[in-house]
Length: 144
Image (cartoon, rainbow, N blue to C red; front, side, top):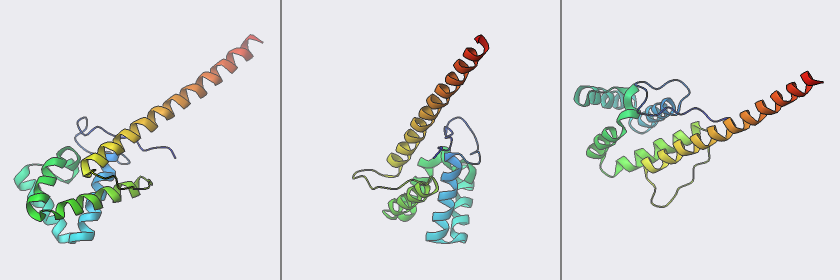
C-alpha cells in the first residue's frame, strides 16, 4: 500500500485533501458525530471558533487546545473520545490498530506520523533505485 503524504501541522494553515491532517479532521468529525451527535459537534466547533480563534480546518494545528477543551468538558471521557478518534484515523489509513500500554492520543498520532515518514522514505528509495536502474539500462543501450 502506498502511504498517504503527511503534512506537517506547522507548515500549512489548512489540511490538504488526502493528507494525514485531513484524515484526522475527518476522524474527529465522525467520532464527535457518532458519540455526541451532529448538533453537539457543531456547537463544539462554534465554541472553539468564538473562544479559541481557530476553526475546524485548523484543528490539526491546535490539537492541544482542542483536547484541553474536551478534558474540561468531558473529564476522563476525553480519553475515550481521543481513543475513538485515533482508532478511526487508523481505520482510514487502513492500518490495524493495536493498543500499546501507556500510549495516549498524541503518542499514537506521533507513531502514525513516524510510520508515514518511514514509508515515504522507503518508497522514495525504491523509486530512486528503479530510476537509476532504468537510467543505467538506457546508457547501456545508447553505448551499444
